[in-house]
Image (cartoon, rainbow, N blue to C red; front, side, top):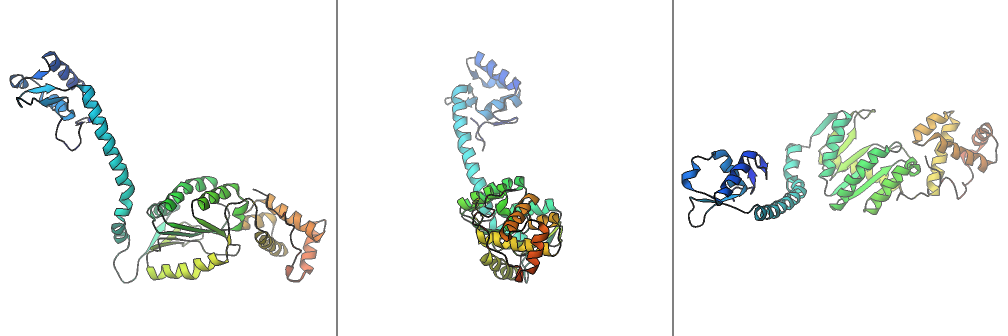
Length: 343
């Protein structure tokens, strides 16, 4: 076998032997499996080298100038074992590489200067690519505050494996969602998997800012309302402020969400109070549902239960009673509430 760094590597690739090299090997077998020095000049050097590289020809121990044929079965067994060991080594190296290069990556993305840098990234595709790279290299902490309604099921499915891998690397994971996500089956499944993996999820029913922080080294915030421009912040002082004065304050006011189907009564009460406020302003059902991130069917169920709570027959009567109720107060919702409603 040749003394190359990759045993079995020929000009055609690992284990690839040309037809002419195969014919040459068979010809050598017909001459008692030996290629004498005087016959080497009549042999095409290119195909001879293929046989040497893959290891089907080796120098004779008694006379190194003579090449002898090797049993292909024994050769393949040896190469298979060698390649399998190398494949395992490469897989181990691939898993360790992001951590090994983490300090260099930080140096590349965080220029040495007074204060950190702020990068503006335009386009959702590029934003998601950058965010994916940061998440895949996260080893300490991932924080996210994501206002609005439920994310699409396909987006949740693609995020689940990535986020679970983050937890398996030993990083902590905390995320804040809108309460409407509690009524979304795909979100419940995602949250259940994340919390089972050691992550934490909560919901907050008041306005809050979209924010993602990775390892407290990079923070991502939107620049435009349409989310087509994002600022990637590398300044430690700004990141510390965003975490302590924005994320942690919101986190402490949010309610725990473990993916369970039952919705806490406090969440239902707060959501209904928001519905009442919007109804009294004359907001349409479609706009209310969109702003709360729930379906119109779920909204209709909330309104129907409130009509029953206030013992009125119509939406007009409900609005009249609500308008005359001090501070928009309303009776306690029934224990069964909307814990079984799904979008």
